[in-house]
Length: 93
Image (tube, rainbow, N blue to C red; front, side, top):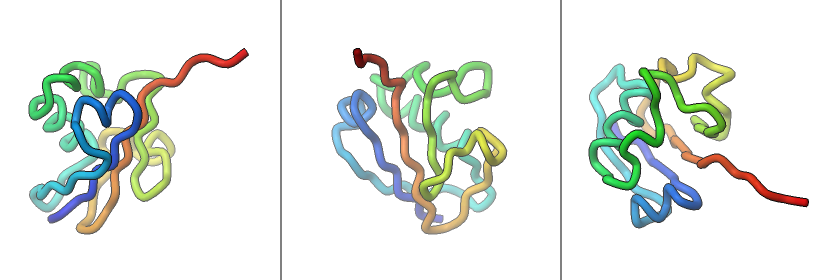
């Protein structure tokens, strides 16, 4: 199944593009996608998952909805889904 992946800020820098498409087996989860991205892109190694869980302070969206409000890394994916990766953001005054 084909999934669109969108990356922002430092994740975009690591991937080199805002949007990429990847194919995954039926039954793939958000965690599967994140684990594969960590192995594919050196700049993402250890940045997305920690002991199988999504690292704190990250926003990972499936079709615009935060997966922490679904099943976290176990959130199932379907053909045509979009997964968006937002790194931690700090700052302000």
